[in-house]
Length: 144
Image 1 (cartoon, rainbow, N blue to C red):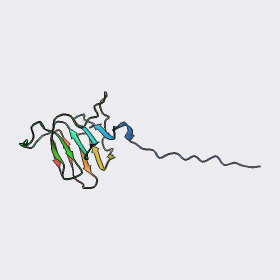
Image 2 (image 1 turned 120 degrees about the vertical axis):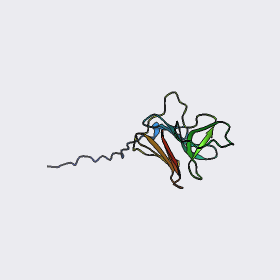
Image 3 (image 1 turned 180 degrees about the vertical axis):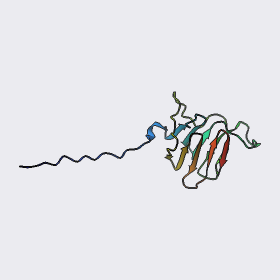
């Protein structure tokens, strides 16, 4: 009598995060679990940056050079520490018809040289090469 071995099947590795759900036009957008911040790792014509927009306190004084919205967002670029931003409108949202997906607490999103992670109440984004970044929550923030 002959015996045959069952065929071996190789399954692809599983992932817990589908990056495609965050991707829009070569950038990546998400909402924090508490819904307080819209964030993104975005590819701009001259640089890549990671940032978040939402209400936080305390906010440093508005620089004289900022004539538009101040203190509604923090970002980190490819050079230097994280910093509050001066912007004329929303930056870290895909602008799509649906809200950007929630980045689950504890699940990192690493794209374009930056890594962002969330907890139930805050979000941190770091430039993987320089290790500069920020952590922001409704009642606290830190740039480094």
